Every structure is written in C-alpha cells, then in structure tokens.
Amino acid sequence: SAGHSVSSLQAVPFHSRVANAALAYARYLFKSFWPQDLAVFYSYPKHFPIGWVLAAVILLVAVSAWFVLRTKRHPYLIVGWLWFMGTLVPTLGLVQVGSQSMADRYMYIPSVGLFVLLVWGLNALLDHWPCKRQALAGVGTVALACCLACTWFQLGYWQNSEGLFRHAIEVTTDNYLAYDALGTVLNDQGKHDEALAYYSRSVRIESKDVEGQYDLGTLPIQQRRFEEAVQSFTAALRCNPSFAQAQINLGKALLEQGKLVQAAAHFSEAARLIPDDPEAHYNLGTVRLMQAKPEQAVACFLEALRITPDYRDAHANLGVALMRQGRPVEGVTHLAAALRLNPDNPQAHCNLGLALLELNRPGEAAVHFTVALRLNPQAPGPHYHLALALVRQDKVQQARAHARTARDLATAAGQAALAAKAEELLKQQR
Image 1 (cartoon, one colour):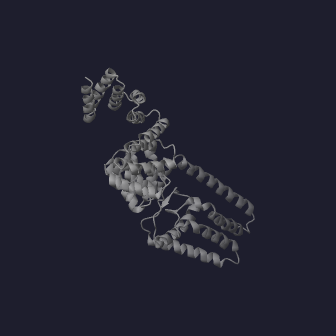
Image 2 (cartoon, rainbow, N blue to C red):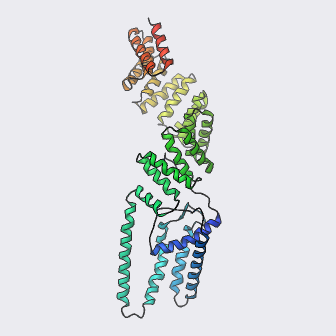
C-alpha cells in the first residue's frame, strides 16, 4: 500500500474486552497443550457467544479455586497458575494496545507458569512410582519430540507472507487484517485484481478498519479509477481524520478529477498534521500553482525545500512559480537545480529553456530544447520552443523546419492550440 503509517486500532467496548479476556485465557490454555489453528493475527469477533464466555469463566474460576484449596499441600500449583494468569494480563486487551484479540507470540513468558505446575505436579503424582525417573524422562522426551514436530509443521506456514496470511484466513473467521495483508502481498506481486478482491473482503468484514479502507483506495488510484479511490480514502478519513497519508492521497485523487478546491483542503490538512513532510507542502503548492496563486505556491515549495533541499520536483515547480511571479532570475536558479537532480528529464530541459528564453538567452535555451528533443523526439513542444529560440538567433531556415515538425506532431496528437501556434510562426517566417 503506498507507504503509510497508521494504527488500525479500533475502539472495542469494555464489556467486549472483558468477554474477550475470559475467552483468551481459555484459548491460550488450550493452544499451549494443543497448538492447532495457530495464526499470525486473531481479530476480535463481531459477537461473543455468551455460552462460550460463561464456560470460560466457569473453567477459570473452578481451576483457580481448586489450586487455592491445594495451596498448603502443593503450593507450586497456585504459583504456576498465578504466573500464567498474571503475566497474561497485559496481553488480554483489557487496556487495549492493539486490534488483536490474542497473540500466540506473547505466550513465551506465561507458559512458564503452566510448565511449573505441570512438571512439579507430575513429579508429585509419580512420587511413589518405583520407575519415576525413567517415566519422567520418557514423558519429557515425548513432549520435546512433539514440540519439535509442531515447530517443524508451523514453520511451513512462515516460508513467505502469502502463505502466512492465507493460513491465517483458513484457520480464523472474519480475519479482516489477514485479508488486507494478503491483498498487499498480492498487489506487490502485480496481481491487482486478486488484491482488490481481498481488500474489498477486508472492508466488508470491518468497514471501520482505517488501513483496509486506505489500501482499498490505493489500488484504484494506481489504475486511475479516481472516483473509487475517493470513496475509499473518504471512508478511511471518517474513521481517522488524522490519517495524513489518506489526506494526501484523497487530495491527489481529487486533483486528478480537477476538483482543485477540495484537493487543496486535504493537502492543507495533511500539511497541518505532518508539518515536516515535504510531500504535503509540495502537493499543496502544486494546487496553488494550478489555481494561479503563485505567491502561495512559492511559500509551499520553499517549505518543502527547507525540509528536503534536494526535492527535485519542488525545485522545478518553484522555478515555474517564480517565473509566473515575474522573477525569472530566481526561477532559472531553481529550474537549473531541478535539472541537475534529474538530467534525463526532457520536461526539466524544456522548463529551463523557456526560462532562459524569457531572459533573452536564446542560445542557451536552444541547447536545452535540443537535449529535450534528443530525449523525446516525438514531443511537439520542444520543436516549437526550439523554433522560437532559433528565430531569435536569426536562424530562420532551421526555425521553419522545427516549426513545421511541431505543427505536424501537434496535429497528429490532437494538440490543436500548439499546432495553431506553430502554423502562425511558419507564416511569420515566410
């Protein structure tokens, strides 16, 4: 998804977090001894089945009560149980720190308590067996072998991201984050249609998932389906108005639709949210330039360059804005900087050439127009501009040749205005 950083955390009601905590204790306990259907992420269920919640509560209360009653004779039982119960508290979501309902990765510390009560309990249970040492050694060997087998089996799901998230989808229900993550993996592989299907499934499951809505918008914007992109980014911002990257991408989609006022509003908000992000200021400056507000555009581009001095597009657009303000000398400085940062860009050569032409330096301008033509021979603009530069150098024959080429190329490309200008130049030089 288009480089972004935003929390996908959704507010979960306290009663749901309490119900989840009870179920999570039971699930952690079960999966510690029967590691089946493990997943990289477990999402909160839409509804908590009251029967299962009550069963989990009864189990926890019963086990706790039994261990309390056995405290004097077998204190290790309550120690191990309280270790397990206590160290899991930060991971249960009572104080929400993530959008997962539970996470297997947290069990490495709580499981110590379970193994304490299990190992010491077995030792006490077999205390009067004549072959206790051999029996415990055998049980330990079998347990280690089972752990190795389970580890080898689980590693198969971690070979690559696609397999990991597909497995999470298979073994969990309505796992919106797994659908979203798989969509991102497939998008990176160039499987855009399949990625779109998974992004769409993700937001159908959880419409308030910020990242899911954002990712669903990035794909249409890449495919120039801007209305779809606008809908998704707008949905993301309804969930989290402070999501600066969504503000930027929504602004870009609106800009492509020609909605300059709305685009400017979102770019301005992005610049407020992330004042040290040069892209936010650059985008706002670009809209101001398109709105014929060069003074505001200049301020935005200067701020972008203050943050990132080698921001070539900011140099280029700042140069154009300065030219429109009637400050060609300063404009040339920034256009030249943009060209140094991107010497193989024909548009950068054209922009600098036009600025030099305005400063009445046609010879230097012609050099840049010539390079632009070498980089993009079929572009009518550089031919026309080169013709203008040659006219000012009294090289009429060469100017006529380029003006004629510009007219023909512009006509073929449907650029009627440029074709008319080239024709007018030809008439003037007859």
